[in-house]
Length: 279
Image (cartoon, rainbow, N blue to C red; front, side):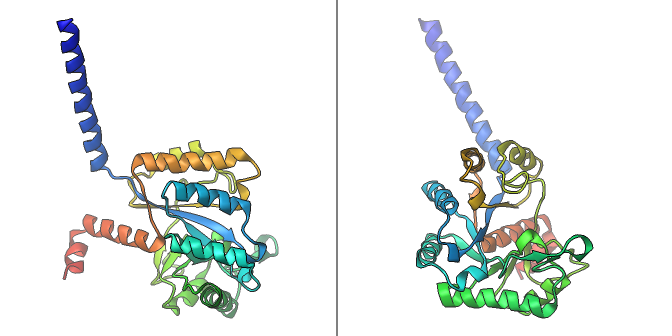
């Protein structure tokens, strides 16, 4: 009996030590900040069941996300959609400019998207109209932009350079050499996403990509909630991704917060930059 008690006590002590070691190891390599980039909300169609289900889950888990609003849907929005968006904003989620029409045309070399291959004036009008509608319909100034199809060009950079209201550019896919921009970029890491391929969440593919890029200060992962409700397995895969990230200790942040995270990490890795930032 005495030997058993000693063994039990020793085992508990070893387990406690192991737990402390795990905590120390986790603390030495913090999980990245996560931006949930959720695309394609159209207010003229009401609130799609996919959006409702996703945000019921996220809010039950106290997880912050972002909602890409398509401007054209704010021309004649349904009131329940406007109300739903305003509640999400009040609860700490970020609404952002996802272009005006989410449109494309042509094929092959003639393929044109809303922010790739269109004129400067056309791109100016698309961003400006969505900004205007956000303010008029929602009372919100969108501070973040992300293009439909994540497709942009040098004209997009020129348009955004003239807008002080837009501060963050998610998934800028043109290089700084080809299209320099003074907006704070949140880049895309193709290996780390929610959907593999687009519209189909895949936990195992996400976990593999996350493992390869866990040392990034910020990960922006994209999804399309409207596509997740017809097949219950898709929503379940998304839930697994979120719960995995929570278990990792990841913090879910807005784009503007993510930019601060990246800048802080950059300064920490660059003593000269840190001294300059500190005056």
